[in-house]
Length: 372
Image 1 (cartoon, rainbow, N blue to C red):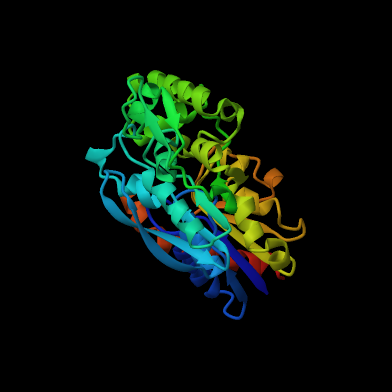
Image 2 (image 1 turned 120 degrees about the vertical axis):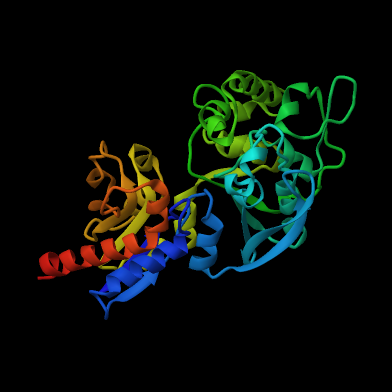
């Protein structure tokens, strides 16, 4: 029996590789002789780089870049052959920013552009950037500054490239832009389809979870709109540019980046169709499965590419009570791993044990009913 174990991370508790290891331990209590292939995944959010490192066997290294508060920090990247990958959550992810310093309009993302320049200088020809899980709302102005763009106000003074200054930009200067940007293909690994502006945009939908106050949302949305009317109006019509506090818009406009479906991009890197064709069972998972999961999150993205004769089982921290159509999305069954009511902190602490127990139960049922 061959089992593919392909979970996303369980945010706040376990990384995708840790989830995969726990699931394998639970299954092995019943299927000790099975062949297991653990391929942790990510769809652009926090933990995508860890999943790629584990699944693709990437080497890792770091480079010195500008940090979210203007200091120098070491930022990691993964690489293999001519491909390199990094995620913005390593620089300005919510867990990286202390709660008392979460000011999404003041955080700097210049280091992301600096790292892209560095990787192109190192000779990488395809660079993937995960843009989920960030604490900033700056529309990519910081990223662009890292490429060499300068942003000036009406008096010609250079502005600090942060979200707070978007509305003040009157001129964009390109003289110092890194000249070899076109020598690499840049992929924006993304798991949302939200536009940059409007009711479904970066400020309105994602701003509050990053710390944007209610009264800051309308002026921030207006500032993003005015900035891109000047910089690249076509970006305002493009789905997915609201990801990463608008960083996706910046990568498109200033680095000729292409927004790609996060999970499909990752599965293509893994040569998924070749890997899955002789599997007997596929296990997927994420921290919470709800209606949003059906719009292209990792478990559903995987399930939709699994041959129909192979069952797909999802193990999740929780499953929304209103979620009833997982079978239509290709998931045979979805199981929450909690076995009793408990506080969130306790549930997070028990994630590994709960995953192992639930995986063992699934294997026991499968062995008893399906294999017989």
